[in-house]
Length: 259
Image (cartoon, rainbow, N blue to C red; front, side):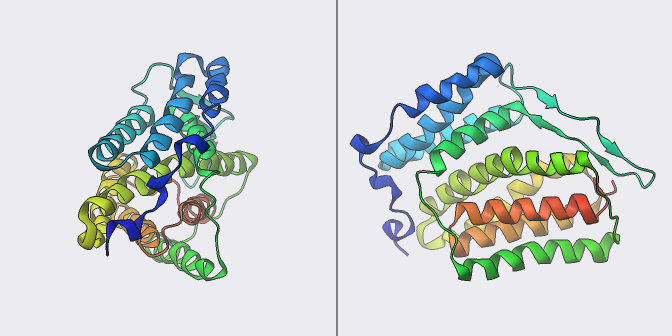
């Protein structure tokens, strides 16, 4: 498959780009301080990526990757974690935080402003792939660990945060930037992007559990997200799949998974 058939968004007309957007996004410095500039910087980096070609486009992939990683790992000053409610805990050992990484939140704001202009829609056929992607890791998780049903206001708030912060920022990084960039680099071998991104996703998330079964389950979920992008190339579909798996994990499975 040729590169042009993979992605046509890099032909964006510069004159049609709403360059006032980063000025509006700069208002994030009011609640977040200097770290608020992560939102407009994310938008500028992603928008520039769609305009450029050749070596400059490749370089901008690295810029986006570096920016998102720095924000996600709280390396940029001011991008600390903010707690909304007291964590949920119970006698079964479940512990769920209603908090968010402000660096990820700012990246998600910039990503959201950028992605709304991409006009990606979910078609009826996409729902089949979505259901399969969600069902596989949750079903396997129930088999491996058994149910741990729970609900509370904290969990509901945590679910909303997970969608708006975690899933949008992570799918922007793993799918729109990392996997898409690998696909362009690998061309006819683009299928290799699936196992590569699966391994990277699993390695970057493995900190919350060192249990072999948990790592396998996380790797399975990661593979499902990667193959969903490979087959459908739809950002919002991947966001919905990632979010649904996370929410069902919070509601139905031990959280976090036993280590």
